[in-house]
Image (cartoon, rainbow, N blue to C red; front, side, top):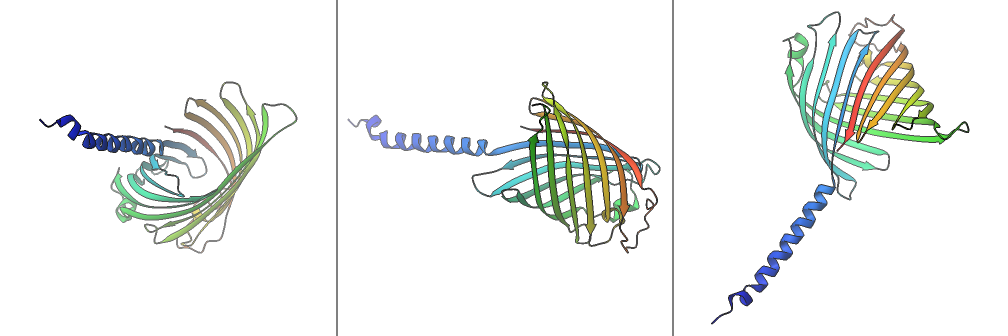
Length: 267
Protein backbone atom coordinates (compact mmCIF):
# COMPACT_ATOMS: atom_id res chain seq x y z
CA UNK A 1 0.00 0.00 0.00
CA UNK A 2 1.39 3.36 -1.00
CA UNK A 3 1.54 6.05 1.68
CA UNK A 4 -0.07 8.93 -0.20
CA UNK A 5 0.77 11.39 2.55
CA UNK A 6 4.47 10.58 2.31
CA UNK A 7 4.44 10.65 -1.49
CA UNK A 8 2.73 14.03 -1.54
CA UNK A 9 5.02 15.54 1.09
CA UNK A 10 7.41 17.21 -1.44
CA UNK A 11 4.45 18.77 -3.27
CA UNK A 12 2.97 20.09 -0.01
CA UNK A 13 6.36 21.46 1.06
CA UNK A 14 6.81 23.22 -2.28
CA UNK A 15 3.28 24.62 -2.04
CA UNK A 16 3.99 25.96 1.45
CA UNK A 17 7.24 27.57 0.24
CA UNK A 18 5.52 29.18 -2.77
CA UNK A 19 2.61 30.41 -0.64
CA UNK A 20 4.96 31.85 1.95
CA UNK A 21 7.00 33.56 -0.75
CA UNK A 22 3.84 35.08 -2.24
CA UNK A 23 2.67 36.33 1.16
CA UNK A 24 6.06 37.85 1.89
CA UNK A 25 6.26 39.43 -1.56
CA UNK A 26 2.69 40.74 -1.35
CA UNK A 27 3.45 42.19 2.06
CA UNK A 28 6.56 43.87 0.68
CA UNK A 29 4.57 45.39 -2.19
CA UNK A 30 1.83 46.54 0.17
CA UNK A 31 4.41 48.12 2.47
CA UNK A 32 5.92 49.97 -0.51
CA UNK A 33 2.59 51.46 -1.60
CA UNK A 34 1.58 54.88 -0.30
CA UNK A 35 -1.57 56.90 -0.86
CA UNK A 36 -1.80 60.64 -0.47
CA UNK A 37 -4.54 63.23 -0.81
CA UNK A 38 -4.03 66.90 -1.64
CA UNK A 39 -6.65 69.56 -2.25
CA UNK A 40 -6.46 73.34 -2.39
CA UNK A 41 -9.18 75.93 -2.89
CA UNK A 42 -8.42 79.62 -3.17
CA UNK A 43 -9.69 83.00 -4.30
CA UNK A 44 -7.51 85.60 -6.03
CA UNK A 45 -8.79 89.16 -5.63
CA UNK A 46 -6.65 90.61 -8.41
CA UNK A 47 -8.03 88.22 -11.04
CA UNK A 48 -11.36 87.74 -9.23
CA UNK A 49 -11.31 83.99 -9.73
CA UNK A 50 -11.99 80.87 -7.66
CA UNK A 51 -9.64 77.94 -8.24
CA UNK A 52 -9.99 74.34 -7.07
CA UNK A 53 -7.31 71.69 -7.47
CA UNK A 54 -7.46 68.25 -5.88
CA UNK A 55 -5.93 64.83 -6.45
CA UNK A 56 -5.57 61.35 -5.00
CA UNK A 57 -2.29 59.58 -5.74
CA UNK A 58 -1.32 55.94 -5.17
CA UNK A 59 2.39 55.31 -5.54
CA UNK A 60 4.43 52.13 -5.52
CA UNK A 61 7.98 52.79 -4.36
CA UNK A 62 10.29 49.77 -4.21
CA UNK A 63 13.83 50.17 -2.89
CA UNK A 64 14.97 51.78 -6.13
CA UNK A 65 15.03 55.38 -7.42
CA UNK A 66 11.94 54.60 -9.51
CA UNK A 67 8.33 54.97 -8.37
CA UNK A 68 5.16 54.16 -10.29
CA UNK A 69 2.02 56.15 -9.55
CA UNK A 70 -1.57 56.75 -10.64
CA UNK A 71 -3.48 59.93 -10.01
CA UNK A 72 -7.16 60.82 -10.01
CA UNK A 73 -7.86 64.52 -9.81
CA UNK A 74 -9.96 67.54 -10.60
CA UNK A 75 -9.05 71.03 -11.83
CA UNK A 76 -11.58 73.86 -11.96
CA UNK A 77 -11.55 77.62 -12.16
CA UNK A 78 -14.46 80.02 -12.14
CA UNK A 79 -14.09 83.73 -12.87
CA UNK A 80 -16.45 85.85 -10.78
CA UNK A 81 -17.21 88.31 -13.57
CA UNK A 82 -17.65 85.65 -16.28
CA UNK A 83 -19.21 82.60 -14.56
CA UNK A 84 -19.73 80.74 -17.84
CA UNK A 85 -16.15 81.18 -19.05
CA UNK A 86 -14.68 78.27 -17.14
CA UNK A 87 -12.43 75.32 -17.87
CA UNK A 88 -13.07 72.40 -15.51
CA UNK A 89 -12.14 68.75 -15.86
CA UNK A 90 -11.47 65.53 -14.03
CA UNK A 91 -8.44 63.50 -14.99
CA UNK A 92 -6.61 60.20 -14.68
CA UNK A 93 -2.84 60.03 -15.08
CA UNK A 94 -0.49 57.07 -14.66
CA UNK A 95 3.16 58.01 -14.43
CA UNK A 96 6.74 57.33 -13.36
CA UNK A 97 8.80 59.24 -10.80
CA UNK A 98 12.60 59.08 -11.06
CA UNK A 99 14.06 60.52 -7.88
CA UNK A 100 17.43 61.07 -6.27
CA UNK A 101 17.70 62.92 -2.97
CA UNK A 102 15.77 66.18 -3.39
CA UNK A 103 15.36 65.94 -7.18
CA UNK A 104 12.35 64.33 -8.92
CA UNK A 105 11.55 63.79 -12.58
CA UNK A 106 7.85 63.06 -13.13
CA UNK A 107 6.49 61.78 -16.45
CA UNK A 108 2.83 60.96 -17.02
CA UNK A 109 -0.07 61.11 -19.46
CA UNK A 110 -3.12 63.00 -18.23
CA UNK A 111 -6.47 62.01 -19.76
CA UNK A 112 -9.12 64.65 -19.15
CA UNK A 113 -12.92 64.57 -18.99
CA UNK A 114 -14.31 68.09 -19.32
CA UNK A 115 -17.53 69.17 -17.66
CA UNK A 116 -19.51 72.35 -17.20
CA UNK A 117 -20.70 74.82 -19.85
CA UNK A 118 -19.71 74.11 -23.46
CA UNK A 119 -17.41 77.08 -24.03
CA UNK A 120 -14.96 77.95 -26.78
CA UNK A 121 -12.12 77.49 -24.31
CA UNK A 122 -13.30 73.97 -23.56
CA UNK A 123 -13.80 73.03 -27.20
CA UNK A 124 -10.25 74.10 -28.06
CA UNK A 125 -8.69 72.23 -25.15
CA UNK A 126 -7.00 68.86 -25.71
CA UNK A 127 -8.29 65.79 -23.90
CA UNK A 128 -4.84 64.25 -23.41
CA UNK A 129 -1.70 65.87 -22.09
CA UNK A 130 1.77 64.30 -22.06
CA UNK A 131 3.59 65.91 -19.17
CA UNK A 132 7.08 65.95 -17.69
CA UNK A 133 8.18 67.89 -14.64
CA UNK A 134 11.65 68.30 -13.13
CA UNK A 135 11.42 69.34 -9.48
CA UNK A 136 13.88 70.35 -6.79
CA UNK A 137 12.68 71.19 -3.31
CA UNK A 138 14.33 71.54 0.09
CA UNK A 139 13.26 72.75 3.53
CA UNK A 140 15.42 73.43 6.53
CA UNK A 141 14.72 74.79 10.01
CA UNK A 142 16.49 76.24 13.01
CA UNK A 143 15.24 76.91 16.52
CA UNK A 144 15.30 80.47 17.82
CA UNK A 145 16.70 81.41 21.19
CA UNK A 146 13.30 82.73 22.28
CA UNK A 147 11.96 79.27 23.09
CA UNK A 148 11.63 75.67 22.00
CA UNK A 149 8.26 76.29 20.34
CA UNK A 150 9.56 78.99 17.97
CA UNK A 151 11.55 78.01 14.90
CA UNK A 152 12.69 79.71 11.70
CA UNK A 153 11.94 77.88 8.46
CA UNK A 154 13.35 78.25 4.96
CA UNK A 155 12.08 76.59 1.80
CA UNK A 156 13.35 76.64 -1.77
CA UNK A 157 11.48 75.11 -4.70
CA UNK A 158 12.07 74.98 -8.44
CA UNK A 159 10.23 73.20 -11.22
CA UNK A 160 10.38 73.00 -15.01
CA UNK A 161 7.21 71.64 -16.52
CA UNK A 162 6.53 70.45 -20.07
CA UNK A 163 2.96 70.17 -21.43
CA UNK A 164 2.06 68.82 -24.85
CA UNK A 165 -1.53 70.09 -24.53
CA UNK A 166 -0.27 73.69 -24.18
CA UNK A 167 1.41 73.63 -27.60
CA UNK A 168 4.52 71.92 -26.21
CA UNK A 169 5.04 74.65 -23.68
CA UNK A 170 7.77 74.66 -21.02
CA UNK A 171 7.01 76.59 -17.83
CA UNK A 172 9.54 77.31 -15.09
CA UNK A 173 8.47 78.32 -11.59
CA UNK A 174 10.74 79.12 -8.64
CA UNK A 175 10.12 80.40 -5.15
CA UNK A 176 11.91 81.01 -1.87
CA UNK A 177 10.09 81.22 1.47
CA UNK A 178 11.39 82.22 4.86
CA UNK A 179 9.86 83.11 8.21
CA UNK A 180 9.14 82.16 11.83
CA UNK A 181 6.83 79.33 12.89
CA UNK A 182 5.14 78.96 16.26
CA UNK A 183 4.59 75.31 17.19
CA UNK A 184 1.57 74.70 19.42
CA UNK A 185 1.07 71.74 21.73
CA UNK A 186 -2.14 70.68 19.95
CA UNK A 187 -0.35 69.33 16.86
CA UNK A 188 -0.59 72.60 14.99
CA UNK A 189 1.13 75.88 14.44
CA UNK A 190 1.09 79.42 13.14
CA UNK A 191 3.49 80.52 10.39
CA UNK A 192 4.44 83.95 9.12
CA UNK A 193 6.61 83.94 6.03
CA UNK A 194 7.62 86.00 3.05
CA UNK A 195 7.83 84.53 -0.44
CA UNK A 196 9.58 85.52 -3.65
CA UNK A 197 8.12 83.86 -6.76
CA UNK A 198 9.18 83.98 -10.43
CA UNK A 199 7.57 82.25 -13.45
CA UNK A 200 8.50 82.18 -17.15
CA UNK A 201 7.30 80.15 -20.12
CA UNK A 202 8.23 79.55 -23.76
CA UNK A 203 4.79 80.28 -25.25
CA UNK A 204 4.66 83.75 -23.68
CA UNK A 205 1.38 83.51 -21.77
CA UNK A 206 1.11 86.67 -19.68
CA UNK A 207 0.07 84.76 -16.55
CA UNK A 208 3.23 82.61 -16.70
CA UNK A 209 5.60 85.57 -17.07
CA UNK A 210 5.55 87.40 -13.78
CA UNK A 211 7.14 87.84 -10.37
CA UNK A 212 5.26 87.93 -7.06
CA UNK A 213 6.17 89.09 -3.58
CA UNK A 214 3.86 87.56 -0.97
CA UNK A 215 3.42 88.12 2.75
CA UNK A 216 1.66 85.08 4.20
CA UNK A 217 0.01 84.02 7.43
CA UNK A 218 -0.76 80.30 7.74
CA UNK A 219 -2.59 78.41 10.45
CA UNK A 220 -2.15 74.64 10.30
CA UNK A 221 -3.55 71.74 12.28
CA UNK A 222 -2.71 68.03 12.21
CA UNK A 223 -5.50 65.53 12.83
CA UNK A 224 -3.93 62.09 12.71
CA UNK A 225 -2.41 61.78 9.24
CA UNK A 226 -4.53 64.68 7.91
CA UNK A 227 -3.19 68.23 7.76
CA UNK A 228 -5.43 71.31 7.44
CA UNK A 229 -4.10 74.74 6.53
CA UNK A 230 -5.67 78.16 6.05
CA UNK A 231 -3.48 80.78 4.39
CA UNK A 232 -4.00 84.49 3.91
CA UNK A 233 -1.62 86.29 1.55
CA UNK A 234 -0.99 89.87 0.49
CA UNK A 235 0.38 90.01 -3.07
CA UNK A 236 2.43 92.48 -5.04
CA UNK A 237 3.39 91.48 -8.54
CA UNK A 238 5.06 92.59 -11.73
CA UNK A 239 4.31 91.14 -15.16
CA UNK A 240 7.24 90.76 -17.52
CA UNK A 241 6.94 91.97 -21.11
CA UNK A 242 5.90 88.71 -22.76
CA UNK A 243 5.43 89.63 -26.40
CA UNK A 244 2.64 87.09 -26.79
CA UNK A 245 -0.68 87.52 -28.60
CA UNK A 246 -2.79 87.57 -25.40
CA UNK A 247 -3.91 90.83 -23.86
CA UNK A 248 -3.08 91.12 -20.18
CA UNK A 249 -6.15 92.52 -18.38
CA UNK A 250 -4.33 92.64 -15.02
CA UNK A 251 -1.22 94.59 -15.96
CA UNK A 252 -2.32 97.60 -13.90
CA UNK A 253 -3.44 95.57 -10.88
CA UNK A 254 -0.28 95.43 -8.82
CA UNK A 255 -1.69 94.54 -5.41
CA UNK A 256 -4.17 91.93 -4.26
CA UNK A 257 -4.82 89.16 -1.79
CA UNK A 258 -5.30 85.41 -1.81
CA UNK A 259 -7.42 83.34 0.58
CA UNK A 260 -6.61 79.62 0.51
CA UNK A 261 -7.70 76.44 2.27
CA UNK A 262 -5.56 73.30 1.94
CA UNK A 263 -6.10 69.72 3.05
CA UNK A 264 -3.52 66.96 2.69
CA UNK A 265 -2.83 63.56 4.10
CA UNK A 266 -0.90 60.31 3.71
CA UNK A 267 -2.61 56.93 4.09
